[in-house]
Image (cartoon, rainbow, N blue to C red; front, side, top):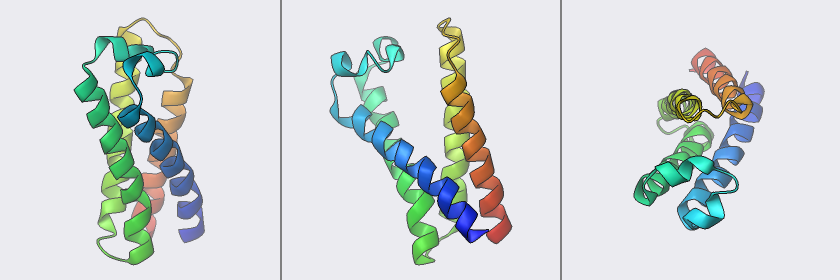
Length: 120
């Protein structure tokens, strides 16, 4: 199970490190082609979401590797599942029906939660 967790959590962490990092450093105009929702959100909120994504990605990987507070990995995975439920709601509320990525990330977070609970 540790190998499976490492693979799924590693891929999830890579996605969120990239996505969160982009949200933290790019301007609204640079984000708009990838994330149309940034027009309806204040930039401090976009930056905060990016920071939470980066911290969550670190939380998925670092605690299991170090053995220090491994429950943080489970908390990070739960946080990502909640984030994707919210993201899906935002997309649907804006009339955007392209939620396949959100549902895929929700599924990956759910698998990560399941894998984390089996080895804890």
